[in-house]
Image (cartoon, rainbow, N blue to C red; front, side, top):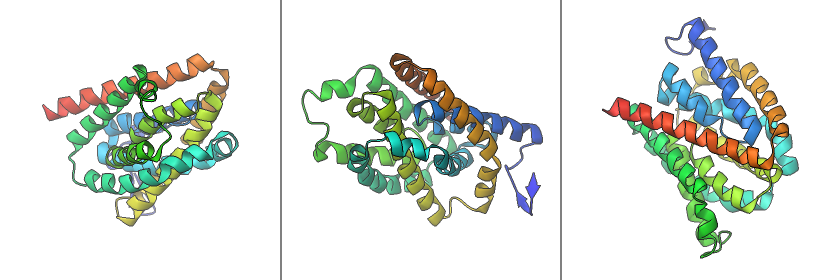
Length: 263
């Protein structure tokens, strides 16, 4: 597909581009429902259509743009104290992660993303932070800074997973769905926006990726609207169960695909 002399979406046919739009609708439905989570399904299914590196770059640019839709909700419901605690360590870690991203092959990138999401899911299901909080102060800078830096490295390498890593921490310190969702929206806005800036500055995101992302905006906005409607229908238990289902689906699928490519 060529627009204004720019070759878009590689070798995808019209049907393939339509399928990619469906992927982005579903991905941003997830984001509308829980505040984050768009990157994982977008990269998972986008990888099947355009490859992992291309899918990650497309996911980053669309995710950055989508925050304009969710920003008012984040500003209204988010906890800025939590945001300030984790953002700087995450920013520093993401620079190292983006460098690693440029060195890793497609199969390993897919496998690492699945492994990351799997670890996050296990930590959430076993209440790892709740147990850890009995031994140390989770709000202390000695814990928050290394934790947020590690999440930044993960986000930088895989494009997703790092925010889920932070999300477990936010779930612990922001126990209500409204505050949790608003806070992770703010964190995602800052983290993804920063990562997009670094990727543009280092030449990974170019004009082609920007135009591709812009062409997906209708599907993104519609998915976000439907997801927000769904969020308002969820109970507290249903909200966090949906969060775990998103993680488990993404982790299993990516691990399977990564192992298959490596073997």
